[in-house]
Length: 90
Image (cartoon, rainbow, N blue to C red):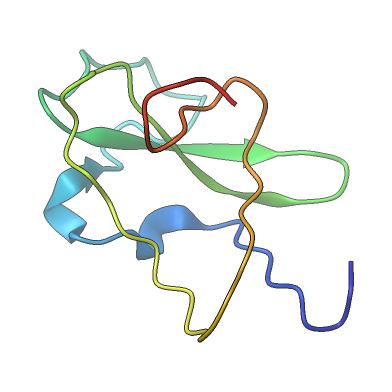
């Protein structure tokens, strides 16, 4: 990673805050029914990172914004299979 790269591993910065829930964020709890129109936070841990990811199975889930605190052009990288803004898979 270049020195000016920004890695966000905790997506609880997503706005608006009421567009997501972390009520069942840990894999050690039973997964509750999907919240209607919302995203859910899922805790994760890998060999290199741990954090809090966003997940939804609701096609009408509220749009979220991730504040980057950066100006100008930037690129985005998503996990394979994640939805692009146009709804296609990544």
